[in-house]
Amino acid sequence: MLQDLDPRHSLVAGIIWLMVALAASFAVAASVWAGSVAREIVVQQHVRRLALETQQLASDLGQAVTARIEALRSAGSSGPAEQFEHLTRAYPDLSWIGVTDSSGAIVAGDRGAGVDGSAAKQAWFNQGLSGLWIGIIEEASTPRKVPVLGDMSAPLQDASGRTIGVIAAHLTWPWASGDVQRLSSALDSRGSAQSLILDAGGIVVGGPAALLNSPWNGVLLDESPPLDSAPAHFERLPDGNSVLIARAPVNIPGFNAPRAWLVQLSEPRELVYQRANDLAIRIWWISICLGAATAVLGALGARHLTNRLKNLTLSAAAVGRNETARIDVPSGRDEVAQLAAAFSKVLDDLRQERTELLTLSSELERRVAVRTREVERLAEESRYAAIVRERLQIARDLHDTLAHSMMAMLSEVRLLRKLQVHDPSSLADELARAEEVAHAGLNEARSAIAQMRSHSVRDTGLGPALSNAVERFKDRTGLHVELTIDGDAARFGDDRADVIFRMTEEALRNIERHSRATRVRISLQAPDRSHLTLMIEDDGIGFDPAVARPGHFGLIGLKEQAQLIGADIAIESAPDRGAKLRVALRIAPESL
Image (cartoon, rainbow, N blue to C red):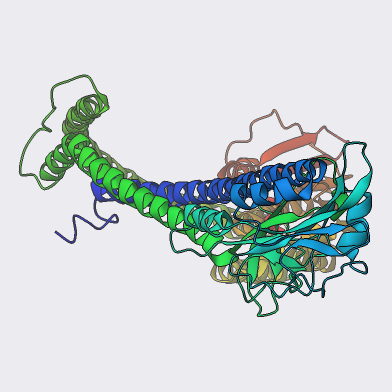
């Protein structure tokens, strides 16, 4: 089982693990991407919703304030007595309503407006004489049990339009707490959203009791807002927490805009991102589960699709173990069927070739046996040829030494017989000469035997061996000899060099005995390191190379030796024109 899951032993396992890896990779990448996109979308939607709720609250407040302002203006034009009771009944959220005359004396309403019967020095009175005023009456003895947004005042005018006093009221709305709670619950079920109303100076005029009449002290963060087009941003509070802030101005027609109120909704930053993170985590888990399901389905599909390939592998392995003779070719026209058919054909071809190779091997063995017997026969003939060559070499050496000496001794014996008959007095001198000839022949025979036993040419090279032979020739004959040997040719010293040395000795003996020469030139050259050339010339009486000489084997021996080493030989001569011998041998550069 473990081996089936090891991709090093199973192609199916490798495909399955590849499917798992691809599914996991795609699932993780898709979950990260989709999570980040969803997270950003959720944050943007939250920011938009917070901004819309802020604008909605600002609009509601603007409409409420506008309605009350219109009521105060109507009261100012209708007279205080009639409108006082009407405003109290119509707008119970106006927790205090006061009316003054044109001098500032309070003529109706609660006197707890921070003054003792006169409001001549109050800002709301002085501003109310000239027009609508909205602000805060700092010292108000009237208890404020509901959120206080501010106070407002308006001029009282008679029928002719003359200002006869000022009417003022506290702007408190009991419905504000419920509205804020509704907005907070809509944004967060746990009530984490906070709704505030700020005046133009940033003072909290609506909201929790702990923050009323205190400045808002959030610090703008440098972080970019989640949605660039939304009027929202992050601010850091004094306690270190960060909140998302959205503000919207309260639009009051006919009132100076820079002094208007601002509605502010805020929510902790971690809660803003918590919803987005939760959604991203859910998307991640969903993607992982889908990826796992895809991997399982892909693994099952891959296993099903590769069963045919697995069966082909088992069949091929069985053929390799000689358990079966043929590969099972599955039906169908897919790649596995084609591959099995190709394997089966290759196996049949290999078997046919094996049979042919066995037949050829048997035929080769028979031919090798025949060739072996032929080689053995040729080897026997080669040994016989070597013996024949050795015999010819001995015959040439005998001809070059003993034959010449015996011929000279035979001539002396014939001369002695003639002198014995015709001139007995000169017999002693000729006997001494015959003895010298016999000694010379004996020395030559010994020298030939020594040369056959030694290999001076191989030991010293062809150049030094020729130099020694030429020196002996000069001492023996007294002839003038010119010897030229270049450095490359002098180092030549294999078996062929020994043959060339013997050919040179034979040529020098012929010059000594037959040419009557006074000058001899010998040259040994290797001009291009691939050919060796031996030249021997004399200025003797010469001869005709075309005339046969029965009983003389000198020239025949030279040609045989040249043929033995594969050299080209040329003999040029004519009566009274001397003789020239040229031997050319092809050699390898590494032989020098």
